[in-house]
Length: 106
Image (cartoon, rainbow, N blue to C red; front, side, top):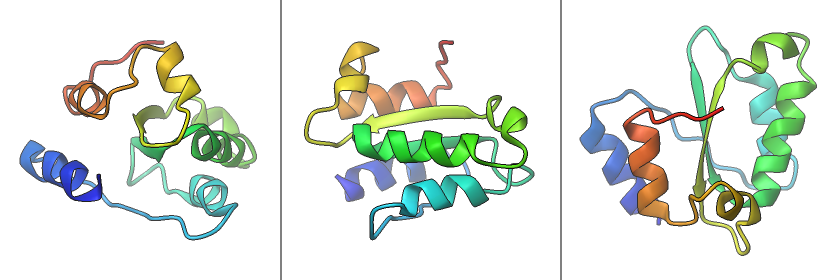
């Protein structure tokens, strides 16, 4: 999936930085420390556990009020993808298209 997702981002012309997690808690730490002056959105590539960690990291920040305004995208690559299914975005291609076209919903 990584080659496919990178291909979509490269073709989009958007600037991006990939950060890969290696251990439990990494996604939480990445979200807690992301510089919102550099990044205006976070795209989570993973499943429900990764999403949970990112949300925990965002809301544990000193500037958590600002974190609530950051756009989150989810590319479902986990084993269950319950969250993605609940918002109608269980397919990787559909999720990528929506993210890259900036299709947002509250």
